[in-house]
Image (cartoon, rainbow, N blue to C red; front, side):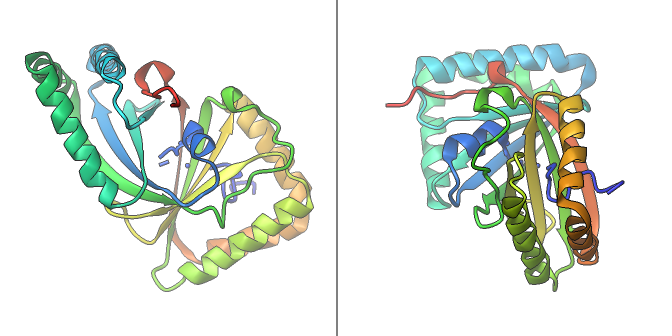
Length: 259
């Protein structure tokens, strides 16, 4: 849309939340809760922050921590650590597991946390729920899972009384994508605690920024007038929109081996 960089992302967010990219791909198309630990790093301290994060990942790996963490970075020095959970009750299990790990590691853990604390301005935690009913996985995706390291996040803050209408528009968009055999996959997330609800986050992957925008343009050409009409209708139900892109950071991520 000319300015509709993504309707639903055909371009779009995380929260991989991550995702939330490798996230949703790893967790399949099912409802899932994600917590995003977003750290805004001081630019001069970025190298130190990443060094600390790598040491932290090494500790998780050594002790075979049971929860994975997918990390994304943006050009404005925001680092998103995304944790998938089974449900809300699982948050307590994660906290217990972290406390036990910290106690086991002891002083080295505390020293690492102190080094990390001076590298960032603040921490912003927010939760997202994956919405499989609005997400799209084509029969023949154009990218293999390991090729999608660039992520585009498209965030729509919906008018409080228009969430049903907004979601219905995107269900129609989903149907249109299927009928047109769109090859670009995307995942949709609903904002939870820590977000300006109601909000929908769309997440899409690409090899890099150029790859994303080239295929985004092609996608809209294929969706044609019907897609354009749906987009214009969806916009009438939002109060604001934000877009952001970033990269999956495997060196700062922790993905335990499958049992």
